Image 1 (tube, one colour):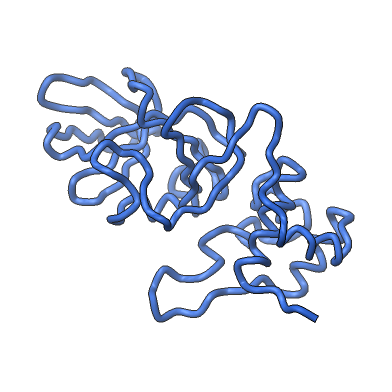
Image 2 (image 1 turned 120 degrees about the vertical axis):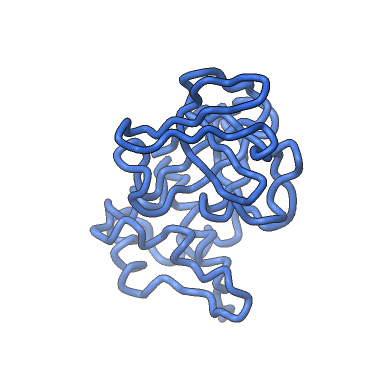
Length: 214
C-alpha cells in the first residue's frame, strides 16, 4: 500500500478545511484541538537542516470524527487539487513572519518565487496574496490563524489597514496615517502603541489589506 508523504497529509488537511470553508485554525477548534495544531508554523521549521513535523494520529482521528470524513476519503484528498469555491480563485499564501525574508516579493511587492502555498480567496484583483497570522501580537484585531488577503495593486488611503515591508526586512501590520511626498505614517491598531514615521526610502512596499479570512 502506498504511503502518504508529509506534503500530501498537509495538503489533505488544507483541502478538508476548504471543503468546509474554514481556516485550519477554525477546523482545529471544531475538532477540540489547540487552534494552532494545523497552522503552517506547525508543519516544520524554516531551517534547512530541520525535519518536517507531522500531525499526530490522535489529532487526525479527532479531525475525522469532527468532520464525519472517513480515512479513505481523507486519503483521496491528497490527490485532489484545492477546492474552488464559487467566485473564488487561488491566492499565494505564506506565513506572516516569512514576509520579511528575501525571495518572496519583487520590488513592487508582488509575490514571486516557488516558496508559496495556495489558498482559495475572493477574486479581488491581480497580485492578491495571503499572509497567515501566527500568535497573539495582532489580537484582538487579527487572531492566530487568520489569513490577511493583501493587494499590492490597490492604492491604500489614510485609515486603511495595510501591510508594509521596510527595506531592512521589517514587516508592519498597521493603519495608514498621514502620507506626504517624503514620509509615510503607520499607526498601531491600539492607540497605546507607538506611531511609526518612515521616510519613503525606508519603505520597500506597502499594500492594502482587502479581506480577512477567519
